[in-house]
Structure formats: C-alpha cells, structure tokens
Length: 394
Length: 58
Image (cartoon, rainbow over all chains, first blue to last red; front, side, top):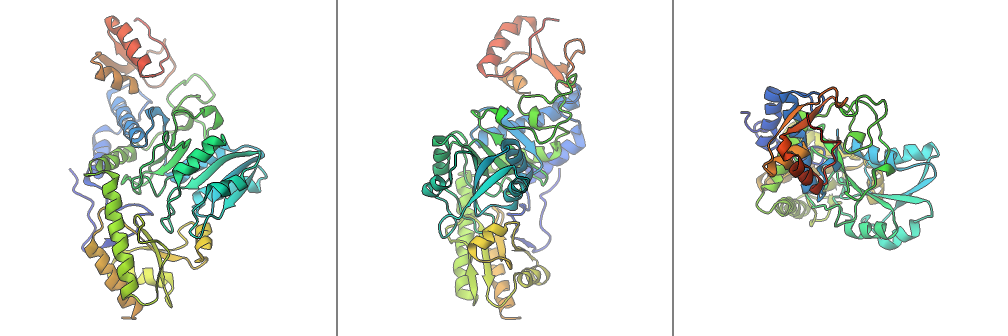
C-alpha cells in the first residue's frame, strides 16, 4: 500500500488551519483502496461494488455521528467543505424577515452568505463585538435578541486568533430563547470535543480536511437528533438514488440534502482521519496538549528572540498563532519563509476581514502559523531561527 | 446500510440485493432476510429506530 504522504526533505508545513498536511497513512491508503478496488457509486445500483461503496459511506457516517455525540448516523450530511455546509444551514434555515445573531470573529463562509441574504432584503444581521478578544456574552446576546430572531451562528474557534467561544453557555441561552444554534466547527473539529446534545447545538458545520485529517473536498453538516428537518430547506435538489419515481425531493435524512454522487474516496479517507484521532492515547486531549505545547513554546521564544514580534493569539491557545513583526510586511515574511527556508505559512486576512478588523490588523493582516499533531518543537525552533534571520535582514 | 449493520450485530442473516422493480422505484438495494427472521428483524429495526418502508414476503 501507499506509504505516508511525506513532506519533501525538510519542508515545514505550518498551514494546517487552511488544510492539514501530511495526512495519516491510513487516510491515504483508504482513498487508494476505494479508487483501486471499489470505485462504484453508493446507493445508485444494487451490485456488490455499489453496496461496498454504500457501506464505506455508512461506516463513515457512523464514525462521525459517534464522534460528535449524535445518535443517528443519518443526521450526518456530507458536503464538500465547511463553507458548503454553512451555506446549507444559513440559506436553508433563514427566511424572509428573519433576524440572525453572529459574531465579529466569523469567517467569510458565514458572513458572506448572511450578507448576501441581507442585501437581498431577506434577513437582518446583528454582529456581536464581544469583549476585548471577541468572546461574546449572555448579556450581549440578550441585548441583540429581537422578536424575529431565528438563529445564532457562531464560529467556535477563530481561524485568525484561535479564540474559542463559550459554546455551552451560548447553547443554553439559545435553548432558553428557543432559537436555532448553528456552530461553525471548521477549525475546532478534531481539536475541541463537541457534543450536540449536551451543548444544545442544533447543527454544526465541519471541514473534513483540517483537524479531522481527511482529504480536501470533504466536510459536512451534522443535525442534532432533536432538530426538526422541516425547518431547513435543501440548497440543491437532484438524484439521490431513492424515490426515483418521484419528481420531488425526498423529505428524509440524509437524502433530502445530499443530491448528486458523494465524494466516496474523500469520505473513506475522512473516516480514517477520525479513527486516527480516536486512537490517540487520550484522544483530543492529546491533540490539545501537543498543539498548545507548540503554541506556547513558539510565542514565548519569539517574544524573547525576535525584535518587534507581536502575537494576536494567547500562549494558552490550541495551535493557531497570528503574528506580525514591526517593520516587515506579512507577505514579505511568508515569501521569505517559503522561498529561503521552505516553511509554509499563510499571510493576510485568512478570509476573515471582520476578525482582523476586530483585532486591529485590517487590511494588512497577519502571518499565521497553524500547527498539526505532526509538527515538532524542532520545526518550531527552525522557524524561530528563520524569523530571526528575516528580521535581521540576513 | 444502517439496517444491515444492525441486523449483522443481532446475528440475523441478511443480504443486500438490488430492489426488485415491482416493489420500488429506488435505484439502490433492499435487504433480503429469511422469512423465519421477519418478526425478529422487525423488532430489532424498530428498537434501533431505523425507518423502513415495508417488509414483503417474496
């Protein structure tokens, strides 16, 4: 079988918030296995290979539903990425004259669909600013709530600063006020445990290719067991392999929201990515410990060694560090990191202009290092040395 | 697939087969079980809250 998708030579990859790399070997193997030996379309035919493909998809649904505390595997809706899932939840749930509450740390995957609906005169939006680091509170939610408020959409973990919102408190508040709670877990899935039932979350959007270590092109929307699907319209209609004599969309999960052939190769890999996390000694605790160790080490050493270093992330964070260096543009830093030191990092606004406005780094943005479980202290040391040399103009 | 998963766990012999065209228009499959297992299968599926269209004796 395929060997691990190794990085070439001494390449250092610190762009795991965009997509994680490398992937666990089992992820790559399962993609190759499906592409080589199965290949069929799940749910569309009755032959053996179609059944095998169907089983791959079902087992992945089961793994994901257990991972996120949902009883029914059918409540896992596969999509292409978190953006896809968020578009479904936003445009499927919100109707004419609805009001929605969101935060100042949202990614464009949330704010753009919302703004599109607002510009069309369909909805109204309230963007909560939160405290000095963007964390929202119950009193802010109380003040924002209107008679026509239908939903609260919150980014669980900021892709810019790594700030984590108090999901349990927000969920409790939404339940008390009978509002739909949609959580964007693009960054947090695979790092912070989420339990839809325990945290009163109606639906979460996740990316399969970031913290869950699946292939790109995977993601999903998970609907809580108690959510009434009549409250969410499909974003697309089409072939599902079920009720083929009907010209209207099926009204049951997951077919209602899953028209068209699924990304079975990607889904096969995604399931193995989650199994990889489940097999870690202390599951997500191990992930958190590893990422926090790297983050704390990097921030503390950078403050000491690199003149003009400014961090917009706390040392206590879980592997997302935004920073700038006085006198250097962020694009100059990442270009030199890539060209001269073979270190991959992302600069700019990270598709989150609101978050950068909130932390005062708009429009220049920041450099972002985002770590995975495969990164090491040695790599961080190499990056620190590289940043020092860039800072000193060497 | 969920039904097959549950039936297997309960040691109820089953087989995925293409849906007979005279029964349904679905493009996919249905689960074939022995007639002796019908009651047990029905009970297991209901217990796991797995929705199914119907059980038909062929």
